[in-house]
Structures are given as C-alpha cells and as structure tokens.
Length: 172
Length: 186
Image: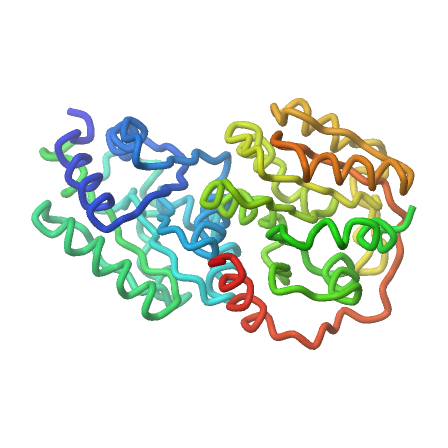
C-alpha cells in the first residue's frame, strides 16, 4: 500500500484553497503522490531542489516578492535546513510554511528513518518553531490556513507535520 | 580587476533590478557605493543568495533580478546551480565574484584557488549562458548584456582578494528586509 493519492489531493486542495502558489520541495517517498498532484496543477509552481535548504531560500524570496509559498520536505530535510531557517527566515522575520513529512514517527517501518524521527519535535521546540500535527483529513484545509495565518502574523516559520496516519490511509 | 570597480561599473544598471547580495565585502562595498531600497543584503545564511533570488525571479517574472554571489558562498550551495539551471528564469542574472579566498575572514584560500572552474560548473548544470571574465571592460559588457537579456546568465568575475576596512553599513537588517519587500511591491 503506497501513500494515499486521496490524502494528497486533500492536501493539494488545502494549499490551493489557502492561495499558496509556489511550493519548493525535495521529493521523498511519503510525498510522491502530493508532488505528482502539485506538478499536474498549472496554477501551482513546483520548484524541486537539490537540497532542502534551497527550498527555504526560494520560499523566502517568494515571500519578499509578495507570493505565498511553502517549503515541503522530509523531517531530515528540515534538519539539513536549520541554518537557512534560523539565519534566513527567522533572522529576517520572514513568514514560512514548513510542510514536513513525519518520518520515523508512529507508523514508520523503515529502520533508517527512526533515529531522526524521534528528534523532529524536540528540534522544532528547541529552535522555537511552532508546530502542529496533521492527522485527520477533515483538518487539512483549516490547519494549512491557520499555519499560514500564524506564520504571517508572527513573521516566523510554522511547521505542519504530515503524519503517517494522514498520508497513508491504511497501516503500512 | 577589483570587485569594487566591478560594482561601481554596474551600479547604475542595478537601479531597477531586485538585487540580492551575499554578506561581507560584497555587501559593504555595494552599500558604500550607494544604497537603494531594491538592494537586499543577506548578512548570513551563506549559500542562500541564489535561492532567494530564484524565489523572487519566479514570483515576479517581469522584474530583473541580480544575485551578487561569491566563490565561498556558491561553493556552499553548488547544488543550487542545478536548480537554477532547471528553472532557468530569464529575468535572473547570477554574478559571482571569485577571489579564490574567504576574504572576509582574512583570506583563507577556497577550492577555486587550485583551479575549480565555477563558470564551467554553471555550464555543466544547464545554465544557458555562463562565462568567466578577467578584465573590468569584459565584466561590464558581460554583466550589462546579462541583465538586458532574457536568458539566465552566470558571470564569474575573477577579482583580486581585496579586503574592506569595515563591514558596518548603518542599516539594520530588518530595516533592509522590510524596505526591500516594499520596493518589490511597486
């Protein structure tokens, strides 16, 4: 059973509904259906990067230019991007929607994901990034919109963790 | 060729561009030549200037965007060149001042000091036009052509490792950030 295209569509709709027009991302397994949906949408610009900190910079530039952007990546990509988040978006008080696949947490079956997975929330807490879990599909539109609202009000990054429970309809 | 001379030569050409510059000597020299609201000085997050420039260029395709980069910074985000090459926004010009050293920390040599060819790397990543220049005339001609063109261009300027006496700019980075974003609203 792969990650759910139906759940990807729900998240895609939530992003479109919140007027997100640019998504900078590094592809990863749990996010493949979402990426396919975003790339098939002519109203959405998808920028695939070589390493995740680029996505943070691209989203930062897009915001400065008046666009609404999100950075979409795996939790390990967030770890790799921390300086860009801290010394880019936080230092310069730029709003940033971080959509983070919650690898290595509940429902993870790949052993290599599990060490990083136990540190996702402590790392977010340590650097003061407000975060919430996306678990139930009914919450997607509201949580995406609320995360953007808070990011723009606080001029800060806000992270929405895309859980296994959300991205996969059935246990892996 | 001196970096400051290069910046002075194109300062007028940057009047209507969104300019993103790296920290250190490039930022201080550009600022000392005359600050404008459309100049953004990225004072940290080394390597990210071309990514920020790409985000601006994609979001405002009608605006010319110029990224002022350095060899040390670019080497921290070489993968970003592949992203530039893939998106290839025609309104973006990527200028790299290559002095083969981390001049802002006292001149420690970078890999370009032993022959790493950043213009060749740029070509290899799919950036439509990339060239290295070694004289001021060549630089001014190449940079102006790049800004005027509708093709993503990378200009690598081989410059001396000039030090600057002060990095102080008398401009708070948040003031710069908000002023810059406002300038892009017009």
